[in-house]
Image (cartoon, rainbow, N blue to C red; front, side, top):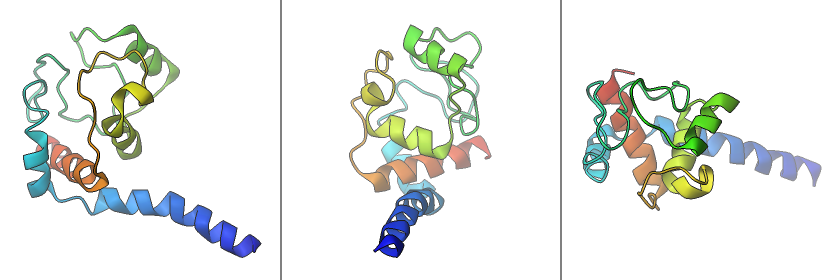
Length: 127
């Protein structure tokens, strides 16, 4: 019984990580159409939202000259880093992951779409 529980816990840790590695940037480009009105992914220029070029591995609320919400600034000060896992959680439910943030987007429902858009962001960022 303990072995089954340990294997189940291991699967919960590994499966999400594998999903990110398998994202399809070409499919992610289509998903990113929902994001492009507010974010650039291929250049360091802010829009309504901060640019996403180089976001993977970047500390939260650290893009120069962007006016972040108090909630996002607090997360950055706490040390939140935009790992693929944290980006996935944020894209799934932005207001739940960081209550009080100002992103108006409700979130992406499909894990596949999240993995694909992360793969696209990484590709366009040269990451």
